[in-house]
Amino acid sequence: MFILLIPGGFAQEQQPRFNNQITINASKFIKGIFPGQEYEYEIGYRRVLNQKFCLRTAFSYYNQTTDDGYFEGGLRLGSDYTFRDFKNWKFYFGLDVLGNYISYRSSQRENYQVGILGFLGVTFKIGDHFSLSTEPGIYGIFNHYKDRDSFSEYNIEEYYTFGLGNIGQIILGFHF
Image 1 (spheres, one colour):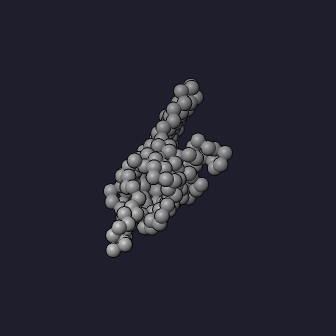
Image 2 (cartoon, one colour):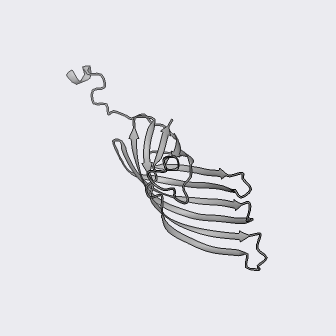
Image 3 (cartoon, one colour):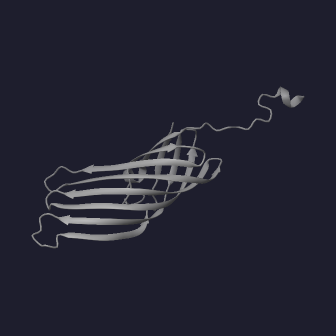
């Protein structure tokens, strides 16, 4: 009888559920902590589909307009799966497909990159709307490099790059 009088008696405490998240790569803005790495994207969006599965996208953009400047743009699409959710901590893994384009104005060189990035992520929630995350991973990238300024018949080079990425990357998240 006493339990019925207490508001919420045995009801479990439910955390607010937000299905959208905007992310900012803090490592790009706080360069003194960790050096910038390849295949990091500045702004991202994450959509929660259910308790375990999320879709995600991110992009990067840099344009230096000087005569010897360059343009760099990239897009990442992927998903992640939560395997452990404990209080303020969330552990997940996922796979992203990524593409980048880099163009150097003065030398007329272009580089196209397409690849995959498998990662293991950890998120720490700070209140209902904010979080800090890191997502170290392993990537494989196909590079197509073209030198339009060269008169050589070998002005195109194609190669693969493999490595560890996003080590020390800090991601700020806003959940809504």
